[in-house]
Image (cartoon, rainbow, N blue to C red; front, side, top):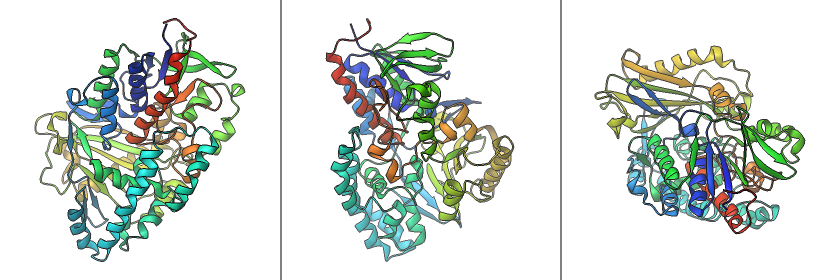
Length: 501
């Protein structure tokens, strides 16, 4: 007899948890509502192009290595990672750029071009990020925060590390130049946070990147998803596509299985949800069974911004452009634009963009002689009064015209493949509450113990992985959440399972 686990959702958190648990000896079945694996990392295939739907920045590649090692395999036999240099090319509103990588001397030369006085400040800033990384990532990222005493134990260290400061304020202690402050504070946006609200512990991302680099998977992020799916099935795991879970069946404090949208009921000893935490509670479990996560509590929490993303391919190559593989294009406004997105919740006429140009590194994801792109603009979640059924097309047009005018000449005449997603996609297709792109916003009072726990407070055998639980969004966060759930569930193998295999 084996312990049976049902995993809901096949994002990176769900896939990593499914593999880790199958490697331990659990009987695992994974259910995905869409026609492909990946969750937010879904791959769109249009006119010979492969567009990665979600995460494109691979940090902490060792976390993928660990997943394969747990299964007795080598990641290199399944996925090829290549380093990106620069990590990012960051543009100001005039088109002037700052290249950022893991070479301290190179970055000091870059800083020299903007403000020589900030060279020393940068070195001091990076010296402090190791301590933040050691505490925030090495010690805490893969540890569950299931009781308040867990939080009290680390509180003195978090205070000592000045976690009460925002990332922007923390960076501003060391940098005087306004553009450099932006360059060293934008990272929370990669995990759904406002640099002016996210605690300074997120400054550890700088150390993480410098220590292990930024990587790209040949074949795109979708190649990682495919490799993880293959590995899971090699371990005996079962994958069900086009299989939407409509309800987690509970009795008392136990989750006893799931009901699919077609009415099929499947029993399990444990349920792991990689679906959005707020959606899981609000839509999959009747409120009468919930104590901690009432609808009112869910509605009171702060959620990340949403995204407007355009995937497009051109019949013209732009290798002579000023662009790199990963580009951050910052608008003239910074705090004011972030206030529009996170606080005022209005759709501004200006924008800051992340522009991904993967064919610089990997021409295989586009037809010969073609270029592939993905441009992302942070926008308010659906708590805003924005009708995306009418706002999406004009917003798309404004972004594409901006790119054509400033970075990609004759862009729109050369487009041969295109698809875009908006906050309605995050709500209706990805089941994300309010259409937020990264679930629960990473503020100080929504981190660690204050975040939805990896083991449900309401049900003893319901577990969470993914962006909305501890430690948070981003690939390192969601992969760490799977590691936590493996640790929480491993002792269950020694107990008598309820179900027969």
